[in-house]
Length: 295
Image (cartoon, rainbow, N blue to C red; front, side, top):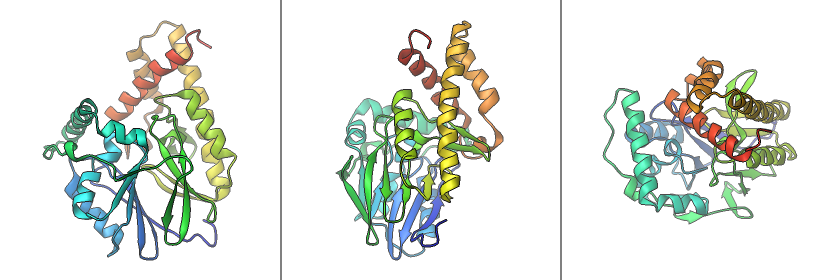
């Protein structure tokens, strides 16, 4: 952590795999992601503890996936004046009945995985108060954050960067923490866009970073090592998928092989296995589409 780091960061969640984060500066608080819908009430209890009396001014949704976005309905009900922001594409997804139906199905499946009954369906209330994209800014406690388009995990992914504090709020495009020596690559919608995003952030001055699900990471060298490992992991995952595909393995077999090697106990601590398998399966199809010749 830099000596003048001005923000307080606390995670909140209702269940493992549905983490959000509070980034506070004085009395002002920005929330980043909101977790599942099925445990929204438990998430609110944890959020209020993290806020410690503050009222959050904004909720930034880094992308539209159910484990990041469905809790936003509960947060909006609890804090009616909060401004829910995300990319224009995120807002378009929320407006689609088919997308909301899929999010509900995935949320119900996640609840069942925890042995819990899902809460009532509130996906019809999903919406953004403001759309943001490249070139827009967010303010927190007198500090200005530049919104960054960060496609790769999804096309709707965004992050935010505070140049004064050299602090990046990133998204799953830059990967998720797997262990002290490994990163789980985050590409789902596009490998090429993921690598481009990683190259972009690797060229930036970043001392500290907020990583989805994991939390804050402090120190320029530590941050750079994580991002470098994430890029290397993306390349290695792509090459592994292409090699297994060339050997004639089915998508299901490739998914199982990757899970056996990469679904570590560290990942299992915050990443439900079904979500890992679903994203890995999507990675395989996407790599085959982006690299039809196998190289």
